[in-house]
Each structure stands twice: as C-alpha cells, then as structure tokens.
Image (cartoon, rainbow, N blue to C red; front, top):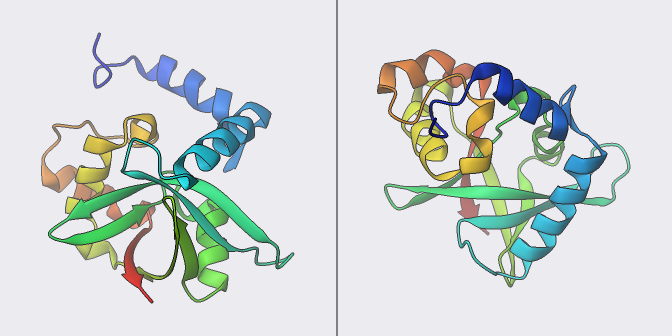
Length: 162
C-alpha cells in the first residue's frame, strides 16, 4: 500500500500518536522541537522552516516547524490541524507578525488567504508535505474540486517579507 492508499484506521492511529485535541502529544512536542531546531538551522529539506510568533496569552516566543509551500512565485503556510491550531490562534492575535527561520531570521507578515483561493495551495501542500498528508481527507491526486470542498477548514497564510 502506498502512502496515498494508507488504511484510514492506520492514519487515525498515527495522528493520535502525535496529536490529540488540536494539540501535540508529548511525543509530538518532542518531534516538533527536534524538527524546529533542525529547520531553524536551514538544513534540508529546504521546504521546512521554523515559525516563531508571540504567544497570545503568555507573550513568550512560540515556535513550530512548518512546511513552506511555493506556488506561482508566492510562499504560503498551511495549518494541517485547521482553525484549532495554536499557531493559527497566535498568528491571528499578533496581526500576522511572525519570524521565519531557515538559517537566518526573516521577519514576515502572514496574510490570511480567503477560502476561495486556498484549493491550489492545499493541493500543493498535500503533494509536498508528506508528514502532513494524513491530516487531509483527500488524496494527493484528488481533483481541485475536492480541495475546494475542504478549503474553509484549513487556514492558509501568504508569507510577505517585512
């Protein structure tokens, strides 16, 4: 069975191993720390980065590894966990101010993409973000219409340099 044809029960098991209730488990946090450190250094794969933003309650810097999707000479971030993701709530609270780390710090503004513009970006995300695929109810080769049907459930942000 290929990654695309993975059994749904297996997908749920893997998701529960790393995430529960919109939050990473202890194992998920450990993996995120290592991936964030690695990506922040600018090491391969180049589509990975560390996103840093202020916490909406604590004001402390929060970071998470992310996959940067490039499409039509623009760069985007996708929340594989949807609206309930902490990083989405933090970015919204800061007005989109964040930092992308890929070896160097790049202050950015994250601009929310409306649902009607998300489908091609979501399709590209599912194509390139192998670890995030299981969070989407559509396959890699699904037609654009299937991505349009789920676009309102997955926030997408365009990355603008500051």
